[in-house]
Image 1 (cartoon, rainbow, N blue to C red):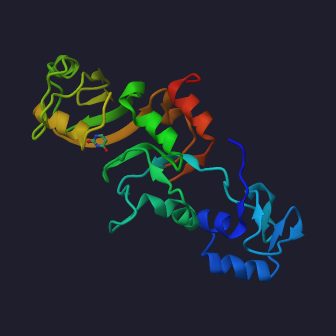
Image 2: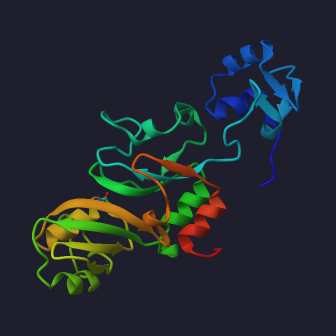
Length: 243
Ligand code: URA
């Protein structure tokens, strides 16, 4: 999309740098340049790519998308108490408009791959049932698998407590007596945990290891780390081709 000229104060405040009155102060103090020349006014219309603040180019002026390795114990929320995933990102990102949000959520006690973006179209493409982007979870169970689970999960008839429709068919690949990889094609509240509860077992550890074609193992991200990338590049990594 072509870059659009905006008021300098609007660009900086929407990127989370500060309030408009702060921007006026920075302009008066000579800390903001436009094409290398001191900005004249906070209301000057410019392109974000022309601006430098204290000699530095702006932080992701064209949108922000990232792949994050969510650690255990972090909550996918901006408001709740406790350790929030947003504490792993620069504080300025919390003030950005449009807001950076996670594409779906992982429970506090689930670790693994999470995508965050401020690109509404990308978020929609990644979550829309039309694109059927699968999510793969490595599951550890309290009890050994009994042998009936694969067929039941694949049948598309498993009902979860409190739900009105059965779960969509899901694939289960056994990796040990009480471990497996579960591939889901929808995202319901606490779905993996509730599916195994419905099968008479209990999930003791859960990690999202893959979203579509993008696997955690292919990235060198420790828990709590992230990497930023362009929306198009992310989408290509997830779908494995250009949409
Ligand atoms: N299923 C769950 O139970 N929890 C998650 O975080 C994701 C899928």
